[in-house]
Length: 129
Image 1 (cartoon, rainbow, N blue to C red):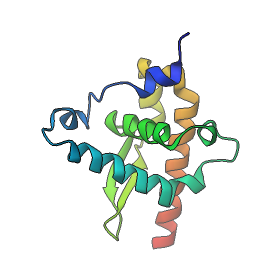
Image 2 (image 1 turned 135 degrees about the vertical axis):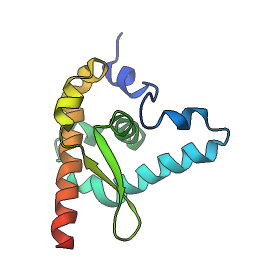
Image 3 (image 1 turned 180 degrees about the horizontal axis):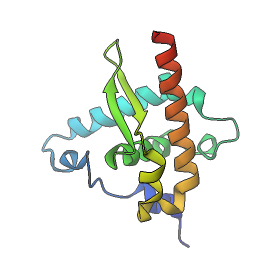
């Protein structure tokens, strides 16, 4: 049976994160995953709606989805004032996602994740103002 979630979340990094595939030291990739885990658990998790597709998924699947979005330039990494990782949806995130044929099987849940990232970033910006 074809599993669209597994197909999308198992995509190899081809864009911004591709260099991590060729690192000799696994700890670089582990640090990247840990950084996204900390971002998700400390900041993003509360912005995911109660009835979201992602609420029923493992944290590792959410992290894999965020990394795919980051790799494809749909979300962008920046540093917050405290030096912690902050992700922001690209200006044209929805267009980028919907124009990526390989992400279409999971488009609705990924768009939901992009929306949560956008809401969290907006909230952080308001708190800083």
